[in-house]
Every structure is written in structure tokens, then in C-alpha cells.
Image 1 (cartoon, rainbow, N blue to C red):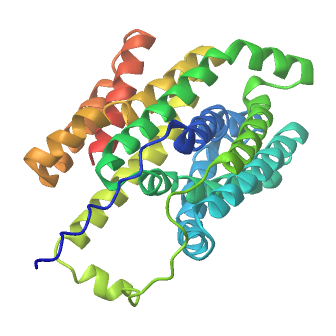
Image 2 (spheres, rainbow, N blue to C red):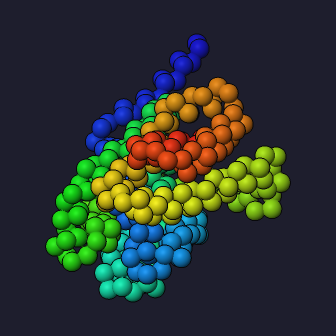
Length: 326
């Protein structure tokens, strides 16, 4: 008598309650970034060190790169929720430190806050992996897409709060850019609390295979060129993020207008994932690199032209769409 075929493994349904706290935390984290670190060059200028306008962004990128491996190892041992909660808490500490440094006019303390915020980003940017692991495998693409859209939503919501942030800055006797760091600390603290309601689908696992060394990794075909492309895109990102808000401020654009520019950047960074993903799947990674480089070049060439702030915002958005495709 033939054995009965084993029953198909049941697939857990994608419950909104499972991923909603993670999505909301991601929106709050993006809002915190939009209202704080992205505008660091304006604070540096206000502290009388405009020649160091790119230093906070450099510290943020460097500390994020260093901390990513640490947080990744933490999450493998103790789980995504523990690691993400710690990253949000570290970001809250960094935002408070940056606020105090900027408020008191202490440049080294402000830079310390920026570095701590960057280290936190190295952790909570791994929420994309947590989102993929929180749903059944056939639904991971949709889950990642929704997470990206929540980043856009968080940025636009904090941009809508530009006037209240200006009022908070006036009440504190400081600029809205400095007050934004205090707002960021509250947002990141709320994100850390939200994660207490999130239940990952997968439990922490121990790595079953040895880690691939750096030399062995770069020996894999295509890794060197990919790393070079990513490093170039990251360098352009740091330059754009440092100079664009400062340039807009010099043009007389007030805080709300600068915030709108940053929301355009977030839209370009995440809002076109629904389009670029399928295109790259169909046409290949090389198409993504080349088209991204072309968009970045077009944005760089058109940005110096005289035009309306709306056109400049569009150029900035296109530049970030190019960074995403790269």
C-alpha cells in the first residue's frame, strides 16, 4: 500500500498586527533622520564652522558602516527585535547629545551626537531584513515594498510638521534645525517602544557555515566592481546631503522649504522601488548601474542652472532615484 503524500506545510498568513509595529517604527526612524542628521550642515554653519559642513555626514556614514557588522552579529545571536530596539535607543541618545551640543554651541559634542546617530542607523537600517523575515517567503517582496513606502510616509509627515518644529525652536530660543534633533530623539524613542509589540516570525539562529573572509569575498567575480559602484554612490550621497540643504538655505529658502527638498530626496530614494525593482529584475544589474549613473549625472549638470525651487527639488529627487538604482 502506497504511503500517503505528506500534507503541504501550512503557510502562516501575513497578519497586519505582525508587521505593523515594524512599519510604524521605520516611518518614525525616517522622520527622525529627515528632521535631524540630514540638516546637519545647517547646524554646522550656524556654529561658525561652515568649512566643515560635510563632516557630520562623513561621521554618520563611517560610524554606520562600522556599526552595521556589530548590529548584524547581535541580531544573529539575540534576534532582530533586540538589535533594532538597541539601535533605536542608541539613536535617541545620539539625538539628545546632538541637540545639547548644538544648543550650547559645543561643536565636538554635536559631532559626537552625529556619530552616535550614524552608528544607530547602521543597526535600524537592517529593518529591511527583519521585514522580510517577518512574513512567509512568497510575500517578502511585498513586505519590503511596503517598508520602503513607510519611509516615504515618515518623511512627508515630518515635513508637514515643519511649522510646529519652527515654533518649538522659537520657544527654545534656537533654530528649527537644532530643535529637530530633540524631535528626532522623541521619534526614535517611540520607535524603540513600538518594537515591543512586534513579534518576529523567525527565532535567532546560529550561523552554520564559516564566515567568508574579505579577501575571499573580493575574489568572487563582480564583487569588486559592485563595491566600487556602491562606494561612488555613497560618496555622491554624502556630498549631496551635505551641500543641498546648505545651498538652499543660502538661496533664502526657509526651513519648511528645505524640509520639502529632503522629502523629495526620500521620495527619490524609496518611492520608485516599485518601478526600479522589476526593471532591474528584467534588464539586469548592469542596467541599474548605468541608468543610475546617468540620472546622477543629469541631476549634477542641471542643478547649477537658474530655476525655481520646484525644479531644483525635482533634480534632487532624480539624483536620489539614481542613487537607489546604483
